[in-house]
Length: 409
Ligand code: AMP
Ligand code: MG
Image (tube, rainbow, N blue to C red; front, side, top):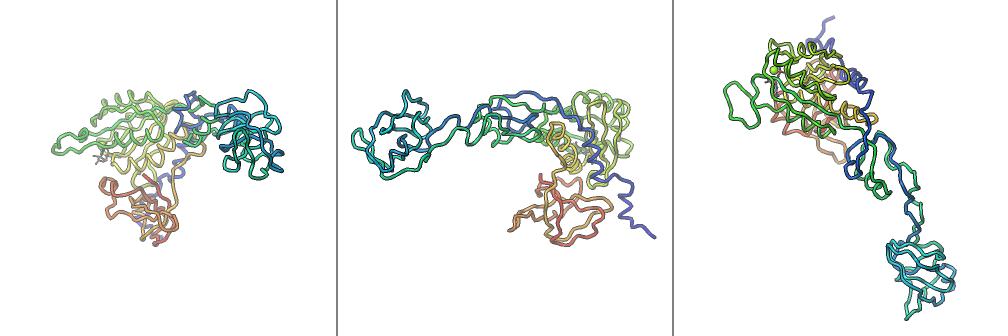
């Protein structure tokens, strides 16, 4: 039996799912919890169930502008004595007595003795007399204490990101502080003698560096605090020293120098600095040379230098790892379902991420159209895309209409 050269390119490499399992296992222990003020909690991951401090509503309140009454006094309707006024924030000085009504605004506490709110538009007022237009059902237009939330109810479960909706509910529930996981500290390093700083004048033989910026932005978006280090030239001693300085956080993301070239010094530098290899090389295009290891609690990702490889490896591995470290339950590579608009095939024996336009079809499913150019260095194609679609290494040519997994940028 002959083996196609295309499938040989992936033989012996770790599958994406297996690589992710190894990364996830290294994130089994989330970072410690810390208390943050509620107004700084959005986007963080709850470390404990966040519970209401009060009943909501906290007291029986009016849902309308009108009159606090006894329902029995409206059936049959009779003229009631107007015995005062309550605005939102007021507390009634005395009980409502039968045969009387107290003016009340939306949100004001119902006075003792009243059981119903007669809407303003359902009453006729004549001097200090209020006459209901007709009978009113008991309890109408009253928002009862605790009907929404009871004190101690969970409003945001542990392991979930606190969204604006959770924070809104917690603010209403009298909560001023919540327990969240500490943000991971990510150190970002890039290697490469050819790299120019952002916006530097072009120089022969050199290219502009982008990966540190990409990694910083993606890591911050994943909730991390980021420390960016200077670019390291391709020199073994300089690389080892830079690696040591950058092993100070929870995660080190180092770009470039993890392949097999004579100037790829990152793997030996990591090994020299006591970082144990967990895996090297994944059945993935772009991103095959991805290296992953750890030293004590610090996780290290050696990312291939091509910009699209860095993005792909971040989306698949680094980002979900940062979410796991923050305690997000079930964080994993964030694949979303999509449908191919045109046929597509893996480039060789590796699962291939194709840059693609991803536009919602009429049924709401993302329609993926791969960009014309495909290559790990094509930042123009990246800019023209909305993300990647993953074509499995064993898929052969997938026809238009096939369901595929996509990664959104
Ligand atoms: P390497 O992984 O070091 O072999 O780099 C692979 C390719 O990516 C080379 O063409 C590098 O010039 C390019 N490259 C490496 N690092 C960066 C970076 N930080 N920003 C942009 N391109 C890079
Ligand atoms: Mg390099």
